[in-house]
Length: 175
Image 1 (cartoon, rainbow, N blue to C red):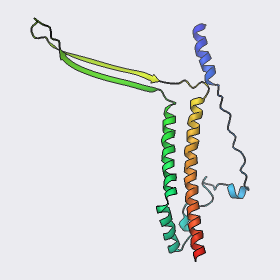
Image 2 (image 1 turned 90 degrees about the vertical axis):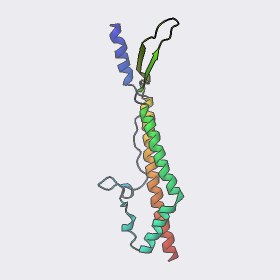
Image 3 (image 1 turned 180 degrees about the vertical axis):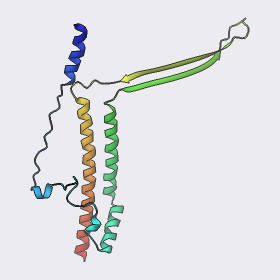
């Protein structure tokens, strides 16, 4: 009975999580503005060239997208968040450590004739570290890292859209 109590207790605790259930809040904008298209993307297409047919304006927008430092930083933030998510995701798996060694030698003893060559092999494998996620701490950290990664992608899209609109606005004001 005692042998069964420990695994049953571990199984019962594994089902416990202290993380609250996320409920997405209602958007503070009318449905017409916040509704995604049928394919799940934003209502506005990603190709801004469909909106701006003027070749001069397209050249200005291309130059702005190519040379804007803030947009480059936003793209680098996406890579950083993706890497941090990968690191956090790795914490959910056990860290396995392994080592192998080979040595060849001859024992030298005074007064003995030539000793035979001895080969020595050694290998070791083990679990270096693993945290049992009884209360969902590691999963919550992984979910938070994923959310930061997705938020950085959306921030990059927003920065791109803002740069395109500001360049077009400045172009039309100049005209």
